[in-house]
Every structure is written in C-alpha cells, then in structure tokens.
Amino acid sequence: MSIIAEFTVPADQFALSETLSKVPDMIVEIERVVAHGPEQIMPYFWTTEGDYDQFETAAAEDPSIEHLEKIDEVENAALYRANWVQNAGLVIYAYTEIDARLLEATGQNDQWTLQLRFDDQEGVDQFRDYIKQNEFNIDLHRIYAPTHPASEAHHGLTKTQRETLITGLRSGYYEIPREMTPKELAEKFGISQQALSMRFRRGHRALVENAFTVSPPKDE
Image (tube, rainbow, N blue to C red; front, top):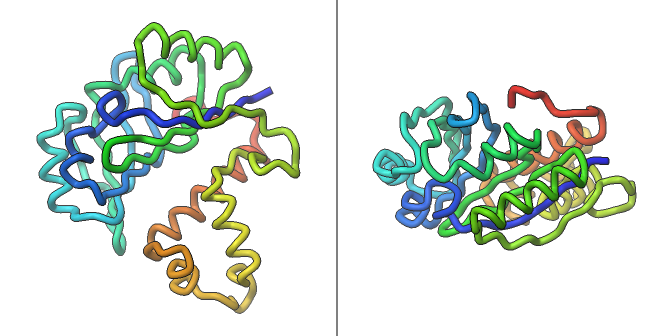
C-alpha cells in the first residue's frame, strides 16, 4: 500500500536557498526530477510570480545548482533545468535507495513544501531514519495512505489542488461553454492565470498517476 508524506524543509537544507532569499516573491515548483545515479540529480522546475532576470542572476551564483538552462517560457512563467550539486541528498536518497517518488515540491522565500509517495511503510521508516541520521530539520504536516475515495487526501491531491479542482467544477470552469473563464477563476484565488494553469496541471497529473497507474516511471 502506497503512503504519501507532506512536509516542509528549510531551503538551506534542500535547494536554491540563496536564490529564494534574494527573490522572495518568486515561486519555484519542481516539474520532475531526473536522477543520474547516486551522486547526480537534475530537476526541471517552473518559476512564477517574480522577477526572472533577478532570479537568473541569483541562480547563477547559487552554489546549490549549476548549468542553469531555460527550457521554455510562457506568459508569467518559465521552465528551467539545472544540475543539483548541493543539498540534494534528501531527494537522491528517496529516488535511488527506496524508490520514493517526488509528487510535488514548491519553494518560496526560506522553505520548501514537499510531497513524497512511498511504496510501503518500510520505505517511510527508512526515510525517517535517514532524516534523523542526517539531522534534517523537517516539519511533517501529515502522512497518509490514499485509499478511501471520500478522503480529502485521495489520489495524492494536495489541499490547494483539491480546492482548485472543486472550485473550478462548482464554478462551471469545466462546462462547455465555460461558465467561468480562467481569468475570473484566477482572480477568485488571487493568483495569475499561469499559476492557476499550473495548479490544474499538477492536480490532473496527480489524479492520473494515483488513479490509473500502479507504479511511477523509474526514470523520473
């Protein structure tokens, strides 16, 4: 039975600590992670809600990553990839040692919020031991098995994703024609249309991965 853990960790124990402190309004969301063995990891991540020139300048001087490359750019958002060269132990261990899957990672200012999926309780216990041995300062919010259809945690959705999908449904966002436009729905949440689009994308992805797949791809 898979188990999902949601927790926060200080940016200086994870990634982009110096960058996030210099661009505190910027939101960084990891799209996916590619692990190239036990010593190298390459995250792909979206950035929104901040100054991109300032972000790139700060990231170029951040010792936690190297070889920053912009992959794509859309309205109010940009996709980057980079080599993670410092403080990547948490994710490398999860991916290479216990086959955990990073479902979501969002960083802003001085902390990251992460959601990890483990295959079983043994993986969770191993991860707890690793955290304790390496003295990570982690604040665990909740840990659960997504098995009950009526549960808020069902299908691995975060609280924000669930709220966005349900509000969209109740507001007529999914109707044809739409009864509420993306702009109107974004304004309802007080976010940009791109941030709203990313919420929907991650929520839909979580639903598909948890409802229709048995195990995650090993190369992500």
